[in-house]
Image 1 (cartoon, rainbow, N blue to C red):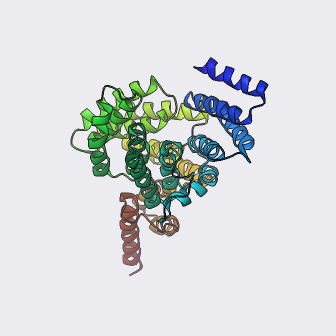
Image 2: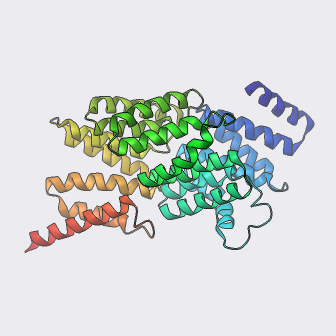
Image 3: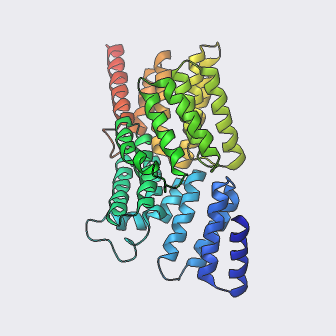
Length: 369
C-alpha cells in the first residue's frame, strides 16, 4: 500500500494534477502518521494545505483536517485548533449546516476535534462536537463513521473527562458493531482498550489490566500512534493494583516513544503519573523526584496551552505541598489554573479541584486564627 501511494504521488507530480497531488499527499501523510513518523507526516500535511489553497471544497478543508490530526498527536493543540476552528464553529451552529460542511465525512474532522477541545480547557465543547458528529453519522446511516465517532468522538472525550459510566454506555453501542462479521478489524482494539479502562476503574481491576494489555497488543499490530496514551492508563491501573514497579516500567516505555517519535499528546500526563507512582514507593527521595515530575508535567502542559492537563497535574502538586504544610503556595497555584476555566465544572477534575481549593482555604483560615 505504501508503494502504491508513493507511485500515485509521483504520477500526480508528473501530470501536474494539483487535486490528485493533494489526495496523494493526504494518503502519504496519514501513512507516516500512523507509523509514528511524525516529522515527515507534518511536513507532508503542511505541503498539502499549501497546495490546496484556492481549490474547490471540500479539498482545502480536508487538508486542514489532515494536518490538524497530525498536530494533535504532536501536542500542538493551538496549531491544530487554528486549522479546525472554522469547521467546528460551522458544525455547532443551530442552523442547518452550510453546504459542503455537512457533506464532509465526520471521520475527517469532528471525531478529531474532541481531544483538542478538552486539552485546551473546553471539556463541554469536546462533548458537543462529539455528539454532533454522532448525530450526523447516524443521520446518513454510515456504519464506518458511527464506529469512528464512537471511538474518537464519544468514548475518547468521556475517558479524558474521567466519566466511566458514559464510556460504559457508549460501549453498549460500540461492541455490537465491532462484532459484526463485516466490521473493520481496527475498531476491535479500541473496544477492548475502553472496556479495559472501564473495568480498571471499577471493582474488576485485574480483568481491566488484562484487557488493557490485550488491547495494546492488538493496537500495536496496526498502529504506532497512541501507544503512550494507552500505556498511561495501563500504568495507572497497575499502580492501583499495587504493582508500582511494573507501572513505572510501562511509563518509561511510553516516555521513550514520546522522545523517539515526538508524539506528545499526553506527555504531561505521563510525567504526572510517574510522579504519582514514585510517591507510592515511599522511598527516601520519592517526594523530591515526584515534585520534579509534577513540575515537568506543568511545564509541558503550559508550553502546549493544555489547560486540562495542567489542572490535573497542579492538583497532584498541590496535594504534595499540602502534605508538607505549604498550604498557601498550593492554594495560590491551584486557584490560578482553576480560575481560568469557564466550563466543565461538573467533571471529576474540576469538582476535585474545587474541593481541594475549599480545603486549602479552610486550612489557611484556621491557621490564621
